[in-house]
Length: 451
Ligand code: HEM
Image (cartoon, rainbow, N blue to C red; front, side, top):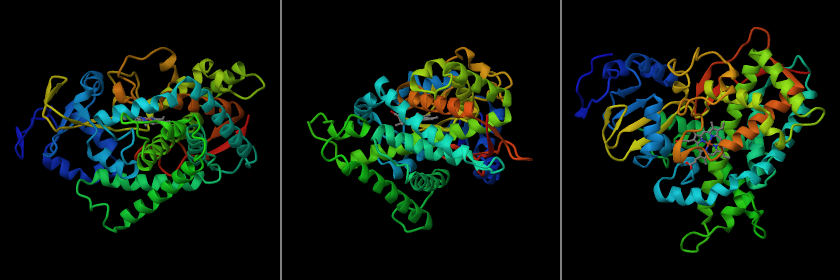
């Protein structure tokens, strides 16, 4: 362990960590690849690391006990008022992902029913439709053509979210809306990485991009809302339109807009990123891909995979879980400590920024044998709690967790049964780029061959 000084600009140092000078020297590397840097400081300094940042004092927490303390046991002490969530709220407003305290609790109560079992069955039919469309497209593709599997998954995931939660057919517009989402999130990333950013009203190039892409998302949402003026319907949008708050008031247009944009943003790039990586991993591991195909064949011989098959697709689910272990789309979870606390025996001051990285935890060698190896059999039985946290944990656990498993498992199973994927000659799994989610750098270039 490195010996650390006791104060940075009068901030008490309570845990080991890099010295200020070494962090300054690493700034370029941090910008280029924050994950490698996190990995390096964790290897050098242990499971609770303090960064030499005075305001706010900043800690990395990388143990199951620490994660449990922050996200579950003392969750009320750890809010979302962090630079990352403030940046995200430039796009999502005050929606479920970024809100806090009583506002969040009231929102979660209203929105939870949209994710109950019946709603998931409806989701299944949207997934089956999107999958059948991709299968038709892949079938028509020349076997020498290189496709970007990641782009296919982005469009499909957007259509599924819009279709199942907002009963809106975005088939024709999905590429454009997906691009607007990614553009807006790129600006958010840049902001979250640079502590001093120009205010969002200044017409900088980045702010102009943000304004344009948010306007595009707003336009999509407003089309969805106006299509419902007579009958609210029973999906998430319908619930938002008919719900009344404690004062018997309906939600404002802005409140509904914030939730819809939140669900579009949180519900498509995440699933698409996981699916994109899954195709890359299957291309690298043909025996695993064959096992996915055999399972689908056994569960649904001579018909397409349906929602009712989901509980029986245990191998495909393990493939998805293992993909989410190696490439957790939400690679960073941040919190702000309301009061002082102790995490893993370390004194945490009030106001501290806590960083939990599922990516790092999922590669911890004390928790996983050969952590870098893709091996779905790890998930043949339950893994210990708080070691696999792609969806977070505790009260702020991802509301779309079951939704994501249904979608990802159905897609992998049905397309995996019908197609074999392969990297073009000389190419392999691309490096991950940690943006809002971990994206394959340059997409996921693959050949697809009918089985
Ligand atoms: C593989 C796919 C997904 C991953 C890896 C993922 C990951 C996460 C994580 C880690 C959190 C917790 C963040 C924190 O504690 O700071 C979260 C929250 C959330 N996710 Fe997901 N998510 C996925 C899919 C979805 C889907 C499909 C939806 C919606 C359809 C969704 C909507 C949300 C929302 C609204 C929250 C905030 C929940 C709350 O705080 O009450 N996510 N997600």
